[in-house]
Image (cartoon, rainbow, N blue to C red; front, side, top):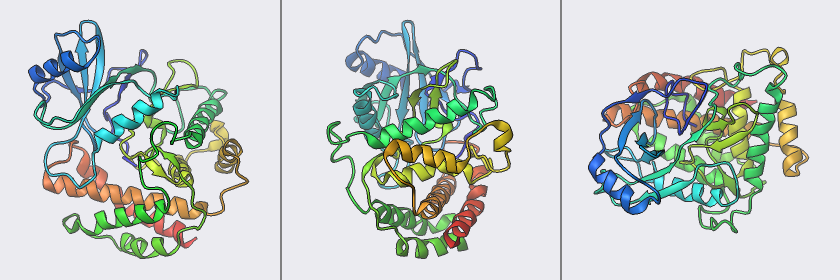
Length: 360
């Protein structure tokens, strides 16, 4: 999970909202990029102008403008990176596969793994217009329409988890089985092996507790890894999702872990993320957590989720581990956003919340 980024990069523009905040002098060689675009992007015509979307904690994102169209570029950050992180190649691969099914994702026009072009690997994709909601209460829509926006989110993540990833050519997109064990080990290792970012007593407890309490009901599906309302582009006027963004953490994994990550909006306040705690759900006409879970279960053919608290504790721990990684990048000088230092202050609250749910 990546925290709310204020004016974080978005891969979509809204006809009814202000344009995203942009920086005018991106550190990208426009001449080399223009040459690559001419050779690899069908229909591209220069001249090319480029501006970086301000903010973001992960992969820097750029708006590319030409006389006959617009694109979005995602690249790895520069500097020393943790092994396996910022894999734009994997992100481009899964988006391309999903696009063939009609699943709501942008079209990928090209992937470049030659770092000599702009300094890192990158890919270029479609810019989709629509609405981004940073607030999980969806304050911009009417009370009558609000349940339909929640239902659209629920239907989309359920659809993702029911896709046949083998037929999409993603059978080797990740290891199958023991997803939670591997993920807990990964995030624990990342936390422990970055001592410069500091230690947290609740994180230390979770590193010990989580691997000993993994549920036995293992499953495998394609998972998004960061499914929340501000990673979704909605139709400009209707409660319909037209694009799911930010697939960097996608892999083959446990669908209930992925759904519980999305469900965390019901368990956290807006601590820099789109949380619902503190909101009057009845007055807002927002489905209750239990109703939302029941709807997902109906769509995926389940009778319920027996170990929901474990999946929620794991995801809060994972989120805290990501914040810990951001803290490390701040110290190493590779954090993309100037707001990264402030985001790290949420780490203790998420770690504490994870431990409290684990003990419940």
